Image (cartoon, one colour):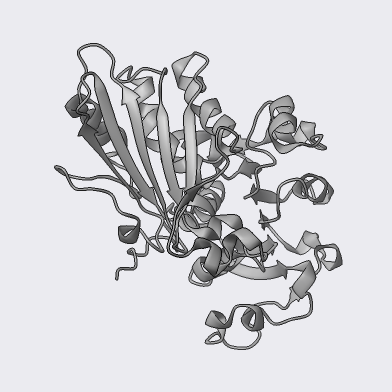
Length: 348
C-alpha cells in the first residue's frame, strides 16, 4: 500500500529531515510541501542538499491554504506551537496526522495554557490525540488518527525513567535531569541567541526551572509512578548542530542497585530496534547516534550511596523529532516500524 504524504512547515529543520528520510521510503509519495515564507520555490533551492534529486520528484513549496488535502493520506505538521491547532482542525477528518509541535502533547489543556501562554483552541482534538513515544505507547499509536510527536528532551528522559519507575527501581522523588542540546532544537528562524558568535566556544543553561518540556516529562513519569513527580530539569545549549545528551540522577529504592536498574532497562528494550542499553561502562555519546533514530543508554553507580546515574543520547532532529514521527507513521499505516529510518549513525 502506497500513501500520499504532506508536510506542513517543510522549510524548517524538522521538515527537511522528514524529506531526507521519506525520499527513501518505498511506500511514500510526497505530494505537498508547505512553507509560507518560501512559497513558490523549489525545495532544493531552500535546502541545496536535495539538488541531486530529479526535477519534479519533490513538489514545489506552497502555502498551506493553497492545497487540496483530499489528495493526501497523511500529514506531518512541523509548525510552531500555537499555530497548529486551527490548521489541524480545518484538515479533513479522514487524514492521519503526526504533529511535531507541542500543541497536543499535554493532556491537560489548562497545563498547556499555563506553560505555553495561550488558550488551547482545539480541546476536542486534544482528547483524541495519542502520545507518540513508540517504545512506550506502541499499541495505542497503531489505531490513532492524531499523534502528538514527543519533544526531544522528553524522549531521552522518559525512555530510561519510565521502565525504572514502573519497576519500582528508583524513587519518583529527587530526579535531576541535566540536559545538553544542539542548536537545531531552536529552529531555523534567525535568532540572536543561536548566532555563531553567541553559541561557539561556550555552553550555557536556559529555561532554568521554567522549560516547557518539564511538564511533558512529568506527565509521562506520573502515569507510571502514580504520584506527583516533580523533576529538577535544566537544559543547556551546546556549540553543535545536532544531538541531545541527558545525565539523569535518581534515588534508588531500598535494596536496588545500578546493576538491577540496568537489568530492568535491558529487559524492557531487548526487542527494540532503536534502543540500545550499552555494555559495561561504555558511555553514550551524541556523535555515536548522529543522523540516526537510535537511542544509546547506560547506567552507572553513583559515589553517593543509594543513588544511580543514567546517561541517554539521541539525535534531537531524528529520534527527537522527524525520525520518531516516521516511526509513528509506519505504525499507523502498518508498515515495518523501521522502514526508511534504519540508517546507521554518521561518524565521524
